[in-house]
Amino acid sequence: MIDVCLLGTGGMMPLPYRYLTAMMARYNGKSILIDCGEGTQIAMKQKGWSPKPIDVICFTHFHADHISGLPGMLLTMGNAERTEPLLIIGPKGLEKVVGALRMIAPELPFELRFHELSQPFEQIDMGDYRIEAFRVNHNVICYGYNLIVERAGRFQVEKAKALGLPVQLWNPLQKGNVVEFEGKTYTPDMVMGSPRKGIKVTYCTDTRPTRSIEENAAHADLFICEGMYGEPDKQQKAREHKHMTFYEAANLAKEAEVSQMWLTHYSPSLPWPDQYLPQVTKIFPNAITAKDGQTIELDFEEENQTAFQIREQSGKDDNCLLYTSDAA
Image (tube, rainbow, N blue to C red; front, side, top):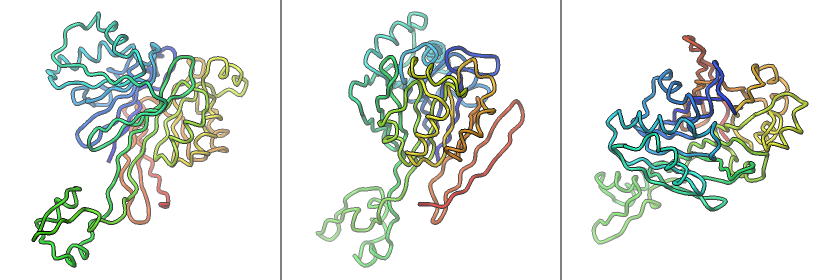
C-alpha cells in the first residue's frame, strides 16, 4: 500500500489557505518527497508525518515555488538526528543549485547524494519500488515522475508440489531467487504465475500538455497534474507561460486512461477551483480539484475489484469518500 499526500497545491506564491507545491508518498517504511515549496514543513507537521524517514527528494525543476523550502527541510532533518544519506533527484545542475541553497544550511549530519537527470526518460531503482523521470515542456528544463511498485504473480503451490520441492524452498523462489535441489536448478518462473497489476502514481506540474505525459501516465492509479488555470479565458496565458488549464489536464487523463486525476498547482488568482470542476468532469469524470492535505491510500487490486480511499482534510474535519471500480 502507498500513502500519498499533497502537502501543498499552490503555484507562484503561498496563500494563507494554500501552501506551495509538494507531494509526499510513503511505502514500506520509506518516504518520497516530490518538490519542496515554501510551507512544506508546516504542511507535513499538520499532517502528522515526519521528514526523518525521507530517503529521496525529487525536484521537477528549479523555480522557487518548487524548491524554496529545501534549506529548512534539510535543517529539520538534521535536527531530527538523521544520519542516513539522502538522495536528491532533479534536472542537470541540481548539485550546484542545492549547494547554493545550502549557504544557509551549511552543516548537516548526513550525506547528500545527487542524481542529475540528463535524458528524456530515466529510471531509478529504489529496491522495492521504482522512480521514473520523464521530461515535460516548461520554460526551463522540467520533469514529471512516476512512482511504481510492481507486484509478482501468485505462488503456484500445485506446481511446486508437482516438482517435488520441499516447503523450505518455496519462500526463496517466491522472492525471486534461484535454488538448487537434488542436483537440479529451479527458477522462480517455474512456480510463479504471471505478474499482477502493481501500483502507479504519476506526478507532473509546470508544463504544457505533451505526448510524453500521456504515454508515461498511461493507466496510472493516480494522476496528479497541474491545473494552473480554470478560467476559460486563460488559455492564451497558459500557452505563453507554458502551463496547463484544467481542461487540458482532463483531456490528458482521458487519453492516458488513468483511474483518477487530482488537479493541483493553482494560480493565486484562482481562489475557488471547485467552481470549474463540473466542466472538468464532463471531460474526465473521476477528477477532483485537490486541496492541501488531500490524502489517498492506494492498495493492490483484489481479484475482481480495486478500492481506494480519499481523505479530504479541512481543518479538524476528516471526510472520507470510498471509490470502487472494476478491475481491468
